[in-house]
Length: 386
Image 1: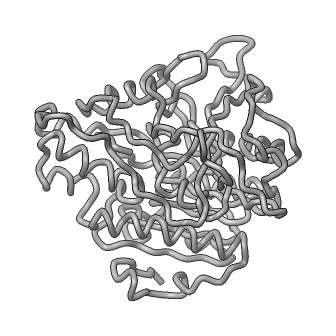
Image 2: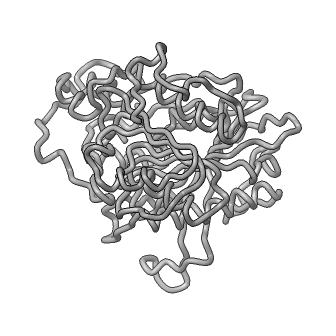
């Protein structure tokens, strides 16, 4: 998250702005739009937002007669991009709220464009596509790991991301924009996991050829029936990493899980027998007893890697967006490193693209990837924690 908050513990957000030196607004003439790296896969990428309603869960915040309401996005490989515009990293209303919430004085018009072509037709080859669902961190949003998400989509995955309403910056089709401080609501990893289990229901609806969008939104050609409900993985960052573990413990539909520096709080003591990988940075087994305890309960395939110089925000879009924002705002190199660590941003991007793909290829496609066998000369920064 291009943000001024550090997610700690089970998800309390502690503003760093109170201790952050003030910086001036951009002074360079005509600053360029921020950019994201191009995915490396053989397929162009498509995306479509979904407005979802979980009729099984009343929403006490919204009042009587209202149910849990979520915004999600589906990312997928595309067969034709002609005439389909690339989507922005965040919708305009959400982006404006995001900049206000995080305190970055950047022109909202500089929001980066993604590789996703909105509404483009799905690339179908006669086989259903493996699925990955994504859960963000506390006070974040579903665009926070677009680099990873569009990378997976470019390699033939369908990735479904979701905003955890009341703990996310999210914009609904009717123009409502909510931020984590809109209401005094606390969400915990178990609440995230409940959202994801509903999202898995929506994946099954799409796989069965039914449209789960509450407004009946027209979906891209080829999307209905394209998803493989028998091959589902999950990834999550921070609180979303903990939610990944909780979702897998509660729901057999997720075959493999990847945690991006999840704190695993509250303590998880149940055994998990399916593949699980941890990309740690701050919430390490050495520093966090809860993470160490969780590791002992992984009874199936397991792996823990860590990139030298990585901080909590290092595995995400912040690695490419914060350095670009820093140039516009006159931030010092030290300020940038305080946010994203000393890991080189270009190397961080390659790590984000390579390791999650190798993990899901191995466990959802059964494609052996030697990258996960041990330290690689191609990635000397990445350490395997035994």
